[in-house]
Amino acid sequence: MNNRAIGIGLLGMGVVGSEVARNLLQQAERLEKQVGRTLALRRVAVRDPGRHRDLSLPAALLTADPNAVIGDSSVHVVVELMGGLHPAGDCIRAALSQRKHVVTANKEVIAAYGPELTRLAEEHEVNLLFEASVGGGIPIIGPLRKDLLANHVSSIHAIINGTTNYILTRMSQEGASFQAALRQAQELGYAEANPANDVEGADAAYKLAILSSLAFHTPVTGSDVYREGISKLSAVDFRYARELGYAIKLLAIARQEDGAVSLRVHPCLLPADQLLAKVDGVFNAIEVEGDLVGKVVFHGRGAGPKPTASAVLGDIIEAARSFAEGRKPARSGSVSHALRVMPMDDLCTQYYFRVTVADRAGVLAKIATVLGDLSISIASVIQKASDAASQTAELVIMTHPAREAHVQQAIRHMQALDVVREVSSVIRVEARG
Ligand code: HSE
Image (cartoon, rainbow, N blue to C red; front, side, top):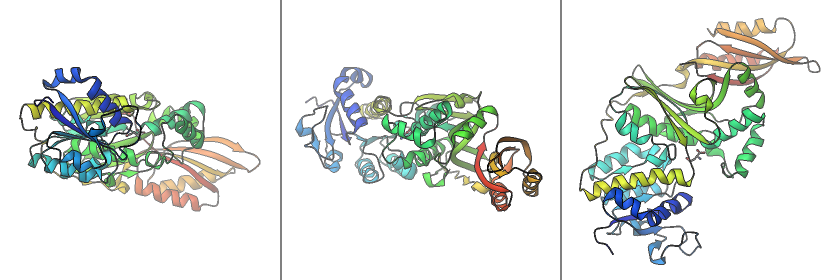
């Protein structure tokens, strides 16, 4: 054994863990050149050490006990790739408390406990690095922690869930229904058998909380993020949106204004000529706007073993370097100005409504009255398909900026009108910026 080697302990060996282990073994020379010391994979915790794996490791390295990895005195950097809150959160806590540098891809843990774990890492003078927790291989945590620090960040607009972006792309390009596009995503391995975490926006909410905590220097968690998923979107909305010059994307949006931060994940109409509107398939993109830098966009593969391993290995190199040099990790900066989380009711934005109504005189006037009474100003109304058999028509209404609370009230009032069959869709619109 090379005593000068830096010991790496791995918790979890799923697809990302295997890719990280493979690179540690097969690209050892490349990694050593970057660190100046050998990186030695010393222990690996897996659920079932007896199971056959494509990447075969010496049996002595494997254990079912994460604490055997964390507590191993020859392990200097603990790499947590188990996923999920439990027991991963406790493992990270234990590793930091034992002065081990920690690298993780775990968005749930960082979204829930990021500020607490960062304090623990600082207290023990070790690194807690989590580049892979948002956007897979896209460098975004590093830039927020360093390159953009001099900015006052006003907003983040992001497509940070590849599964939903794939589904929305299929719906938009092929006119597929949500269910058909989801099935395609599952067949290709992009969506899980239980896709709820992705399609209901929870995954994107975790990631937005992580980005926002760093960008706005304020501790926010996944539960501070308002979220709506994509399962209620219908193929016809994509057609109408396109006719109006928009794409539909699941956007994660954070905005800092007047001492508050608004945090939301929901489907959005986005002007088709904007960069984010052109991000298709499983790709992710994050746009950050700062007072000095203006708008910057980070784009690339947001998931998959190789891109995620790229981010994890980059963090391992950073942790190993600071261990090798015996240097204290850079302090994370102040999170003292805790910003208020703006209630969703206070949001002011534009809206797209698709309303199915009775096809007769006076209907539009009744709807306009409901909206007008709540100070919702109409930007345009288009009557779409009318159905002679049911004597109904579809109205597509675009509004000027209006308050969310008023819009929710208007939906209830419209639904109560005898001429309204259904408020079929309500989608927020991100204006040209
Ligand atoms: N499930 C995530 C996505 C990838 O679809 O983007 C892991 O964060």
